[in-house]
Length: 95
Image (cartoon, rainbow, N blue to C red):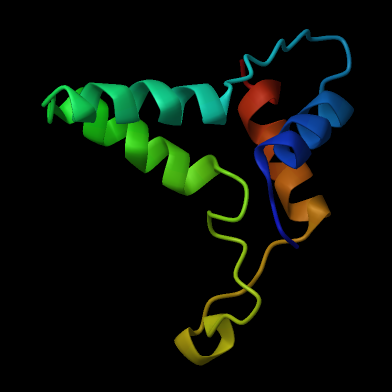
């Protein structure tokens, strides 16, 4: 299963339908534009570097949705929707 932030939120809402969760969405293109403008002005601060890292992780065409993984070779098991729901239940059930 590929677990996106939106899928994690969907499963959380399924487990805890009476709790309200309001996500904050970021405009990746705007973050990149502003970071590029800062770099063009000579700003190489960690804040600007983090903005570029954020874009590289969450921007379209980037991130960790790999087509081929070696999880089995490494002895790593994938998680199912049920596994994630159980994890959420442990977290929100104890809150």
